[in-house]
Amino acid sequence: LFELLCVARTRMGEQSLLDWLLKPPSLETIYARQSAVSELREQLDFRERMAISGEAVSAGLSPESLKHWARSASPFVGGWGRWFAVGLVFFAIGATYFWIAHGPLSPLLAVLLVEWCLARLLKSRVALVMNGTDKAFQNLHLVSALLVEIERQRFETPFLQRIQGQLFSEQVAASEAIALLGTLVSYKDALRNPLLRPFNLPLMYSVQLAFA
Image (cartoon, rainbow, N blue to C red; front, top):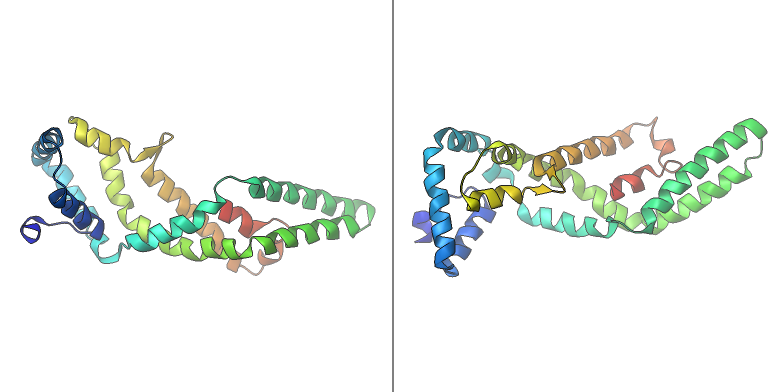
């Protein structure tokens, strides 16, 4: 039955259908899904756009790598380290100005030493997050076009409206969050520039990106 019904393009879609078949829902849920299917049946343009936008998804999407990256990034959500790193950047800027204006280098060296200690403390976690960011963005970018179509579409049935609402967090659309991740990836790639690399420690560049 699964092989007969399944036309999903991703492993996540296949797993969802399998769960539906193995764990029969309530009648209310079944009727809600049928209403959603009836609405989608009439939205030919939307379905065609979804089919075109999703052509590359089945080939490249890796939900396992996304989950692994999300777990590795979770320690950087909130915490004292982010604000401490921001404070050190301001101290470094102030110490640099003091050095240029008045001569003593010791305040700047002291700030750089503290920054080095913090970067050393967070080194393994920063590397874990940064190394997986490119792959995570590649996976998320594949579904971004699909998310845009769903976010823009107007639905009437509560079932589809609820799914659409789950794509927003604090009034930020999922596709917008993916675009922001793309911006952070471009900032990360900027570290390859030899002119920017010397400023990595004073500006706590890598640490700030990991927290972002």
